[in-house]
Picture 1 (spheres, rainbow, N blue to C red):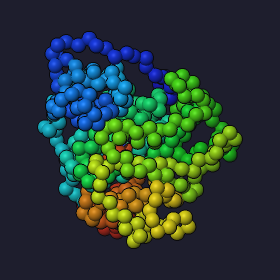
Picture 2: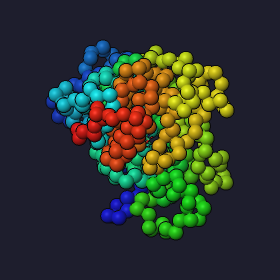
Picture 3: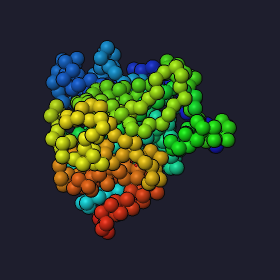
Picture 4: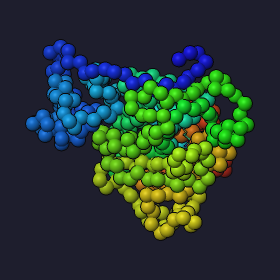
Length: 409
Ligand SMILES: C[S@@+](CC[C@H](N)C(=O)[O-])C[C@H]1O[C@@H](n2cnc3c(N)ncnc32)[C@H](O)[C@@H]1O
């Protein structure tokens, strides 16, 4: 990577599992839940493989789990699992917790650093639209050090697998934050493994399609290449949302639904060998089989806040959501419509609950939370977006918001 280009070029490491550890390392133990999440098995299955019900699992036993057919990568590649476990701090209890006392709070910072600082079981509902893989270039290029060894801004991984691992790592960090009956709603779009320029927003892409972009390939700061992936061919769909859903299940979530969001007004695509896309996905995940779920809320919600879209939807809320795309007027190139977080919050939280958007952008989730009487917390690495969020909320409520601060963590 040179100083001017931040290209995305598939690169998959070829690495094998080392078995050279000291006796002390092999005898080091970790909680059953952590080991189970890292190797992608349920705690019950780990007990079955190991033949005991102890609450802690040694590194030696973990090596045995890594040899099972049932092993499946979650957020750490197999070759790095032992070193990852050995590097874990003994406990996070001593770290400073974020203050959630205000009605709405925006924190400026990286979601991966802020999630472990949230008070345990403080959030009833997480609603978010994270950066999609290799799709957008944001003003703030914020490199994150991920536990799989990659250091890159979230969404700018060299491979879709890197992005999948990082999303699953964030979901892993979100588990202790959620109330046991809470829900996560994670909006994602898939990416095709193609060679393309990465642009900042949909209107730039539209202009390029209309031949109104005079920039050459070399002028782009960020370009995505397709050659070099371990198995994906040029032009193939990566299947990112469903692969994340499967791994979410492996780290201990219930996959309640993989919702198709049929967008009204999606971007045209210049393709002639496949159908045009008009769907994004929303993963609904929970920590138990029966999360808090108020299905009737759908019937009483106003449509701008996620109630029934009379043109396409009937009385029941199903796994196909017909919602408009956002108008982008708030200066954020990747906003979701108010109806999306509104619907999620109404279904799985109650008034006065605290809800979280770890990628809050222009603040759509907090505006929806405010309209529904929920308290909220938002994170973003971009101060300007947080300022937009703050202004949007202030305008929306027509009151001053002394509780709305942008503290540094
Ligand atoms: C898809 S946008 C969210 C848009 C938002 N739903 C809205 O309606 O405005 C993703 C956001 O994630 C932020 N972001 C990227 N990396 C981040 C990180 N590591 N931690 C926190 N925020 C991050 C970006 O600045 C961007 O605003």
